View 1 (spheres, one colour):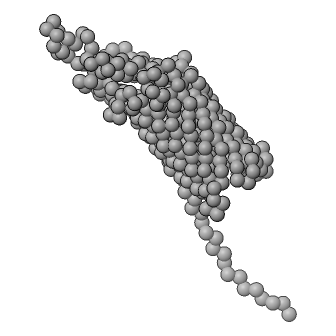
View 2 (tube, helix red, strand yellow):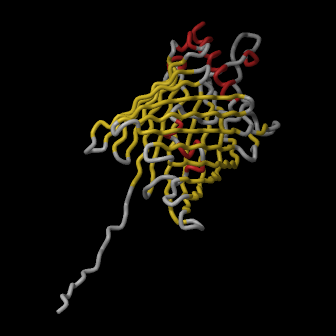
View 3 (cartoon, helix red, strand yellow):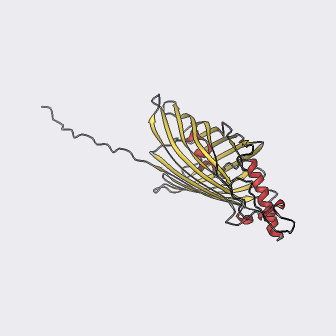
Length: 343
């Protein structure tokens, strides 16, 4: 009984923390989920189309696999047409996600249509300035069922007679939008960097987890800043350092990561990646990656080092992600030429 009360209390604390963040999705492998990070990254790659997906599971060590925090997301984007200038192009995409949190069944889902405009500068477009926008909608729902019993639900005989009827079990839907800007540049043949800034919930839509007849609250805006620096150390070794800072409603998250890439098989273009990261005051991150040509796969695990580590036994979240770029180009069809000798 005490263990169940502890689990329920822990779930409530996590739910309170989630409410503080308005249950916005976030990933340890933020570089593997580009569109959910910054809409300016829509269509910013060389290829015909990009397919991607990521899954995050968290707090299974405390809440169990049936009540853990789980967040799957998927997307597709493509550079489609040239822009106003010869070195510009436009990319469009679609991103979907769902997020289920804790024992009370707090569910958050949604998606949007994304567009990114990219402007190339320099002789070989070595510097690219990008702008992006997401237009879509989201929904939230709290479904506690019989998993939560509060004190006011018990009658004088000690029997439980009511549930959380005042909480909305129907989806609370609202429209939403986000915007972002980014810049990337190749410094030389071995080094490049990128910086980005994005803002979500620009219109601060209203929603409520209780009956819709009550006063609805406005979502806080979420701001994200990112940066990355990539360098080829040798012909087979590379290094990538990146950071993320995001803030929402007074809650901040700071994460830094560094990964080393090893060209394992040059003929098949296979690169293995190993890295570490740190989310300030929360978790140490173990990062693994595999890249073969246009396929990237990543795995991450959070080692919880927050004050909750005594309850979690240092176990945090697990992630797996993949991105694949399809490249289909028209094959040249040269016309036959007859060479006539001159006499």
